[in-house]
Length: 117
Image 1 (cartoon, rainbow, N blue to C red):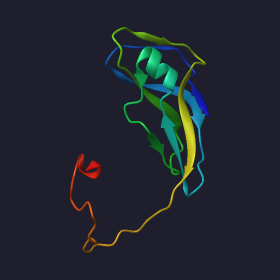
Image 2: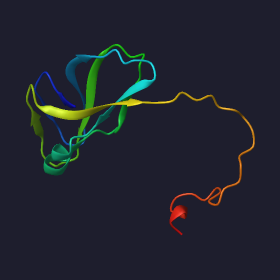
Image 3: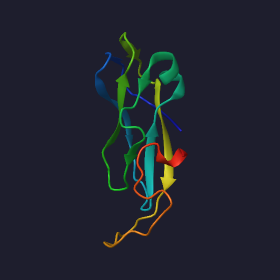
């Protein structure tokens, strides 16, 4: 779903800013909320989320604020009610880690770019 801001502001180039939404969520256990950039803002105005996708965990109860970053060269004005991000509710599985040896794999410890050979 689209997320709207509740007050206007100006995003100066190169400065991250938390934008208020007025929303607070009670996310069920086993779910998270992911916040993502809007493609139109990114393409037309170079506005993105520097921590994308942002994750809101089920224990958080404060106001949802969206961190926006203007990668453009000029200030960008946001008005109250503008759509500034998208929200996805996603299920996740909790895991318990075990210390031990790793099984062999074809890729092994090959790093960046090694899976395309």
